[in-house]
Image (cartoon, rainbow, N blue to C red; front, side, top):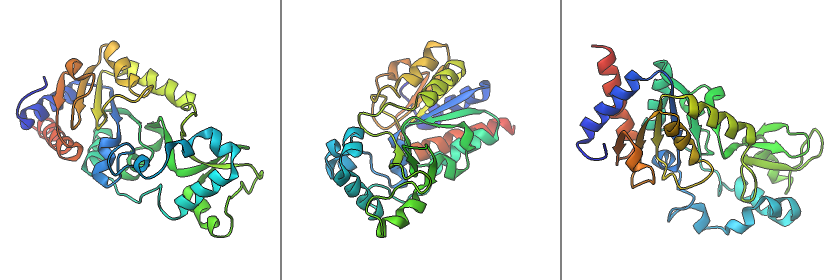
Length: 260
């Protein structure tokens, strides 16, 4: 089901949600762009402003000048943009309140699902979270804001506990995805009965395997994205639309049907 009136498609998606017991929501950059966060690869994205080669884990660890540059950019707001959740994030929170949501699996590093109100323990961040910093020595995690204030007096802040190297808690180029997150995401996708993809082109791997695991296990599939994806032909409902507008319509239909 890839064509038709958005209201009709939203109703069909709502029917699938109502029929389901374990919904997994998989989100990509398209949900965050509506909160004002540029797609990393888009025309206004970070990789059009900075050289991706300067953001490899190898260079970060080996070269103090690279760490110094990145902390300066972070302090100046060049890498982390303050943003607020949009209607799509809030719709996913509503799914949790309705008891339908098993978990959120996200490619995004902006913390917006948690800010919107989803329980942090059911948000699985495949690429980490730029609102936090982790020590590569003792593995202690700190709020990014707590470390940023130190950059004014420390060009390269160190862990106050063990003097270890601090790194933004997002996955850098050349760095493996956190294995436990990937394993849990794959497990939950394989056990869900409905997977809703919101704002992902499904071309970044291994993250893009998640909806495939769900589909292969027999789950229904809803894809909401501006532009095509490699899994469009496998979707039970495919909506080419904006995340916030579309998810609002879907949740309106869900509530209307539940309250009949």
